[in-house]
Length: 244
Image (tube, helix red, strand yellow):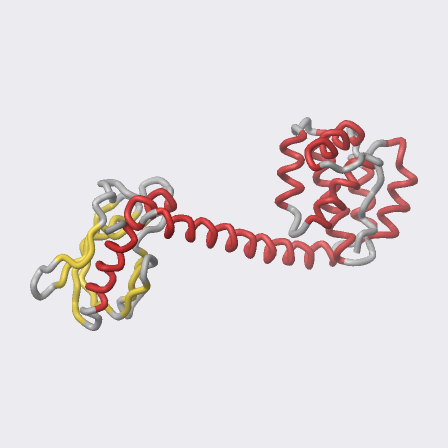
């Protein structure tokens, strides 16, 4: 019997005792807690509900070590991998899931985590888009003048004026300014690329921000060569902010 099958056996046993009182040992932020609650429902591999709250089997800061039926003391669930002090520091949840529930469930968790991170990223970017769209275009243009190649002042003003009339264009220009500021503060190209990636919800935005930095940045040509070599684009040193 593999780890996943053993886990299902524990969940089945727990499900047989819904609406009954259980005692459980919970490690939370490095401290041990023993609690008694009514077991209301089980969500396989996730946790259980008590009617008062949802208790995860494993999270970054909390984990269930054992669950016993209060009336008889019967052991219903046990995780021998939860050690004293669990959760004092952020735990590697995927590794713990792999230990107790097996590779398949751990891989599914990793995918869910990546999907959730992308969703949160999209929400964050949408919120920033809303904020930036309310920012005065003239402020954005003036801010950019502090960080661009000074030989391209006229081009910059015309470019920012043309493409800063909507939330999409304003967002790209604002993020490219931040990136050029980091460039002038001697950030590495890897750090600039990481910033652009985090600021982008899709490849169009990523290319657009990078295009502005390549065109107007003080070290734009060098960054263009880096970006081209990494992603296979031709470095034509032009802005992509017109991609809408």
